[in-house]
Length: 100
Image (cartoon, rainbow, N blue to C red):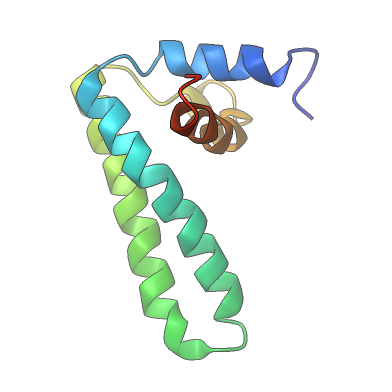
């Protein structure tokens, strides 16, 4: 699904388009918010009360992503290749370990 590139190559390209410190901060917060929101929305299948929380975190996470790119003055990578939607979590994990 990620083609012939390694995950490190995908993360390196993602990282290269996220150099602005404000953009990096927005993504550092926004990416996990999106992941948490998706988990809440799945859980909302059984617990309807979670829908507003999941939806709110999803919107906030994406708002941070786009706000960050406004500071970076570049479009999100997934505008060019949808697979970058999957790379953001890997980038975040690498960043948390000091490798991105």
